[in-house]
Image (cartoon, rainbow, N blue to C red; front, side, top):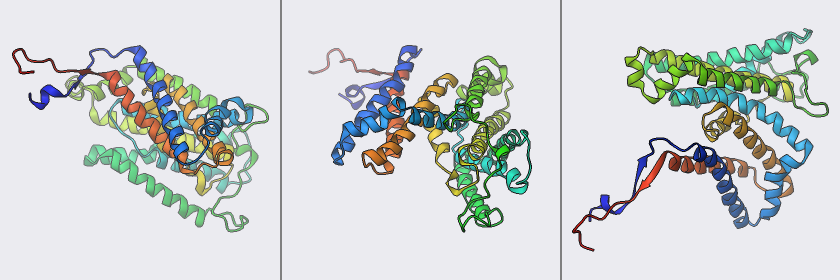
Length: 364
């Protein structure tokens, strides 16, 4: 028998089951958890202690859960913006750089005008950060549309450029003269801080803003004609072109939306829990949000739940570093294995295994 008759093949399902779509991320989370617990056992760590610190404690401890909510905001913002582009097959991998530039744009106001007062400051900072992120993503859009460059490479390389811009500012013109030579800006004034919404915690108004934008993303992608055009352009670009949908316009819109959301998240970070511009602003949110977007099935509602899960992994990982003596890379390994498990699970949502049928008269 030929090789084609021996091995099963993947056949695309005509209509993937909604039940399987919902089950895939749950199975991926369980599989990634079991794989990582086994890895911790091989490393000589106590799997039960790690499971309690990383998976349970973020939800059973009020202080830890408040930090989960805090981290949910930026992850949700960035992932919602990226998902719109990914559904249009525009792959923005540079959200980390757009996040950093957004933080820089937002910080310009309190750095240049440290004595300014008024409740208009923090909303203006958020708007400035969103505009900055969109402008940075616009560079990628220009290269993609005008010069036919690959948006994955351009956006990723621009993230490295953004880090160097941040380093230049914090080691040069924006360095706090009273900061004991640390690479950081001055502390922001009170009116430059995003208001807290839960007393006794660091959870601020960026979380309801992120939830509101998630709802807006749902309406945009599910109910609007522009969102329909973007999705059609991603699923069937030739049909979209025949219908008169502009590919270049779709690329510009997808990247600008992603940059806007990432820049807004960066602005909320410096105007929220940090309160100044620091080199540590580059926390990997832009890369983790890619996992969040796919784990949520690129659906605005699913991304809300996946952002909570990813935020819990961040906080649980920090807990496990202390209580279970895990290495700092353990969180990144968990995130990567979670994405890998989800991609494997979603493959069997979209495809089924077709086994070869023995040919009549073929020798046994």
